[in-house]
Image (cartoon, rainbow, N blue to C red; front, side, top):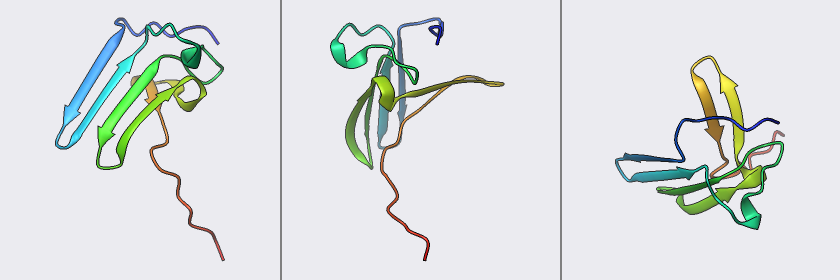
Length: 80
């Protein structure tokens, strides 16, 4: 996968009780580019404090622009 040019190397988003920082320019082994993503995303909010890197970050090009997604909490619901 070719690297995405996001135009900056750090993005910060803050809302009511939620703070997210995404760094594209991270040089450690945990952030090596994979087929899913690169960089490091830090989340602080109602779901706790989490740090994501590498394959934990999905990068997708959409009509609205580049979208990054992570899973904050797995849903353990099962169909019966």
